[in-house]
Image (tube, rainbow, N blue to C red; front, side, top):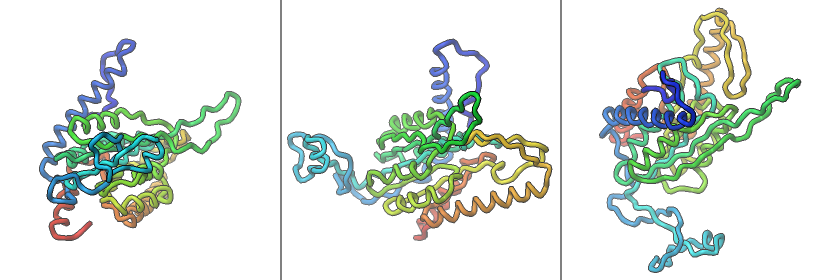
Length: 337
């Protein structure tokens, strides 16, 4: 997959950068959609709560009352808040609703393999969208990015100031391929901001308001402490089939022997110089990284989430195909993974 941030050889004129960036993003998403369709077509079409289409009994969104509406579906809390009569829509039993929690914090703007971690996140969102959008199914997303770091004043030493929850955006769940493509363009166009994001707050956006049973997918590198996001994840699993997609870069697992390596923390802006020629340091780094990943896996397992790990130096699409095939095989045998 080509990177959305690839630099062209032509210098854009004033007023054109946004349009050129949009065109490049659309071209990348089109090629990605074609690739995903060829590999994943027919692998998964979703499990439904019912066999027959109909109005259903699951509560959906509210809308204003219109003459002829069934008064038994009046939404009294919304009516009381707005002083305008509202009725509660119901969702067809045959309709599957999928929500994505897409983490685009500063730590995702990194990659030493074939792609950036951000590229793999967007690709995974496109693949999940393709797998679930058919048959009138609805898909929506919440997207989180970092909070801007404070600018140090002249003459004063820079200080690390705790950042807020970052920027969180909700994209409503809608059906149809055109709406799904618009959602993917919005995700791909999200600016990665410096500073720390709050993965727990991002996941918690899928818990409020409470939703009908469906599928929830969290795409992140999960580098935030598990204490921040484990509880919202367990809460989300109560009513949703939960999939956690972990994006990993090989340099997060081990260090190469390249001498003095300057390293910048994208979330805090801090610069460190690491002497990678020291074998004991490389060993300690690998051991700490392995322990961190084991802690992440244990937290996801405790939350009851299916866990898929995608790496920037491997064929992410092949890994996803194998995962989906294994999930289907487990379901047909009456077991869960």
